[in-house]
Each structure stands twice: as C-alpha cells, then as structure tokens.
Length: 288
Ligand code: NAP
Image (cartoon, rainbow, N blue to C red; front, side, top):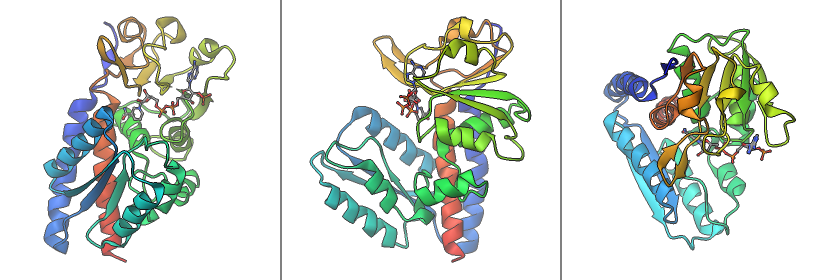
C-alpha cells in the first residue's frame, strides 16, 4: 500500500479528549451536565449499535445520556409527543432520533419537530439554512468529521477540486455546502455526483479530494481515482465478509496519496462531532 492512512479512530480519541476537558470546565462553571437524549424506535440491529456507541461516547467525555426505546409499532403521534416532551425538558440539551424510522412514521415530520436549539444532528431546516448561509449553529456530524479529518491531517481544501459522490441530506449535500464556504477547511471547488451523473469515472478522476458517500460496497475502483488524490470513504456496508466501505480499499490505496479505512475512518469522527454539538447546544441554552 502506498497511500497514507487517515486514521479516524485515533483522531476521534484525541478530539474526545479535548471535549472531555471542555465538558469538565463547563460543569465546574455552570453546575450543569450536558445531556443528550437518544431515541430509538424499533430494533434495527445496526441502529442499536450506533445508539449504544453514541451513549458510551457521551459517558467517556463526562456527559449524560438518556435513552428512550420505543416499540416498532410506535405511531407518529406518539413519537411526536416524546419529541415535544424532550423539547420542553430543561435537563436535555441535545435530541437525537436515530434513523431510519419505521414506515408508519414520516421522518421529516419528526425532524422538523425537534427544537432547533437541541437539533444536534443538524437536520432541522432552520439549522440547514444557517449552515448554507455560512453562519452555522451546529455543523452536521458526518460532514464535520470529514472536514476535521482533512484539516487535522494537514490536507488543505482551499482551491482544491473536491468531488463528492452522493447527494443525501445526511452526508453529500451538507458536506458540499460546508466545503464551499469561506475559511479554514473549506474554500474548495465542489462537484456533487449522484446516480444520474453521466460518465462518473471521468468526473471522479478530476478530483484532488474524492469523497464517497454512496452506500455500495467497493464501488469506487482504482481507475476512478487520479494518482495522488486524497480519498475519503464515508460508506459503511455490511457484507458477508464483514464491514466495508464504498471504496475498493486495497486497489485504491495503491493510487491515492491518502485514504480512510473502513471501519476506523469517518465513523468514529461522526460520533465525536455529535458530542461537540451537544456541548455547543448546552452552552447556548445555558446563556439564554
Ligand atoms: P443515501 O441516502 O442512500 O444516498 C446515497 C447517494 O449515493 C445518493 O445520492 C445516490 O444518488 C448516490 N448513488 C447511489 N448509487 C450511485 C451510483 N451508481 N453512482 C453514483 N451515485 C450513486 O446514503 P447516505 O445516507 O448518504 O449514506 C451513504 C453511505 O455512507 C452509506 O454506506 C452509509 O451507511 C454511510 N454513512 C456513514 C456514516 C459515517 O458515520 N461514516 C454516516 C452516514 C452514512 P441518487 O440521489 O441519485 O439516488
């Protein structure tokens, strides 16, 4: 392998150490413990793991987490009622409703009901609007993780061509929005690709930095990558051989200058940025 590994796991440990210091200072000065409420509807095994990891991370940095587990038959009205209760609860500073939700519930109705001041996933239209305008209240967790991974590994995005494959509201779109803003970790020229993009490989080969957020195992092959490009793999795919990303890691690592592993790349940073947002939310609520 010739590419340098972008180690998200060790960076997450470092940033969580920094957050733990900030949390301890905050608690000392405010006698308030930042608290994240997690809501899990149903028993999707992957979601259960994600929520458990988020709660354990809260504990590691000295924050509180309160978990709400609802049955798969929960109605939209029942979930809305819980969200409204958490909105009113002054002891809860961040609310995380784990996605996906069961079919009978419209996700946007739930996400729109979360108090924007507690919307630590940054899904509420008010927070997305602020992000697009370049004056974010919160930064969305996975895109923020990608940005920190680049910044803290000394990979400058200014003036670079970043190609993002995937246009979801969770990863592709917010990441593109963040990278075109002015300032450190941004100032990039961004192209967003998706399933209707014509000659995808021709576009990805023009990338200085290529981000894959597709949800298809090993979709990005070596011939789609310009030699020396930085490759960030957001994908998490469960296959018969175990977890893998959206990038054909072994082959692409021979072409790229830097590459993220899966697991141990973007994933741990996503959780870390959720902790950061919960602390931000708590600070904001303490001063209002
Ligand atoms: P998503 O909502 O399913 O979006 C996938 C995107 O990929 C869509 O925009 C889709 O295009 C595009 N796409 C699909 N097939 C394509 C193709 N053949 N050529 C070009 N584009 C194609 O997925 P997501 O929520 O963004 O997640 C993407 C991956 O990241 C998943 O593996 C997910 O598990 C992972 N993920 C990881 C983290 C983390 O913390 N590491 C966080 C979130 C997600 P269309 O819009 O045209 O359909």
